[in-house]
Image 1 (cartoon, rainbow, N blue to C red):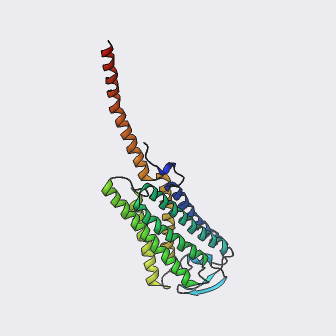
Image 2: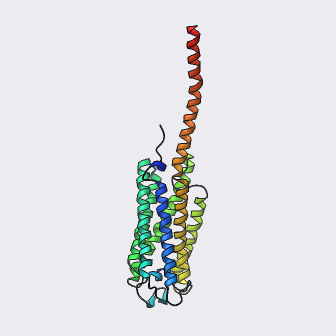
Image 3: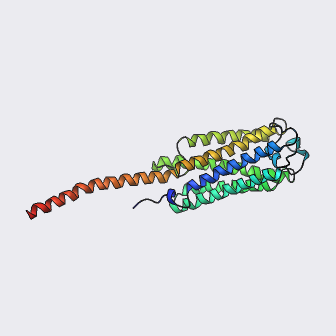
Length: 267
């Protein structure tokens, strides 16, 4: 019998990868639209990335300092943030469903944390930084923590999976593991620098490092899922094909010998 494969299922890791890539692209496109439509000068070091979705046009004062915000297309930028979060939630649900079906318990933890990160993204898009700064920042902090936790669980799960089974993890393996480690490190450094430096040292730049690195990782992770199509399932299919070939080779001579024995008796 052929092994169950997410490659031939309507609920697949590959579909999750497509959704994650679209999620990252949505955020980047929304930011690009905000930058192109921005009135005045947008400072990459002083203005926060959240300023691109601010609903007002004027001077904004918060814990990150005093700065000018004005994006006439703020609703478009905010909509892309919300859409991005929803896409991550959908991808997480598909991962969890596929993991439960195939019995890959290690994937469920990562999927759950990604779902929390997606919901936090939606909240940050619904609550602009100029309307309720504290609520917006809490949502971003929850997003950061959930993403870091998801990356940590993913890498740990992949490492233990390889050590105990010698099989490929269904979500990540190979070069994607150290890439995840490095990007998580830079995001954490950016966030800690932002928190402890406050408004004194380029708050916009360090918030961008903390958040945008994770956005890029979402795209990289999604591309990995698309190209791998569920690494563990491909490995299972390969092993199953080798086993079928092995048994076919063993069965071949046996059948021939049986047929030859019958002819000798008839003669």
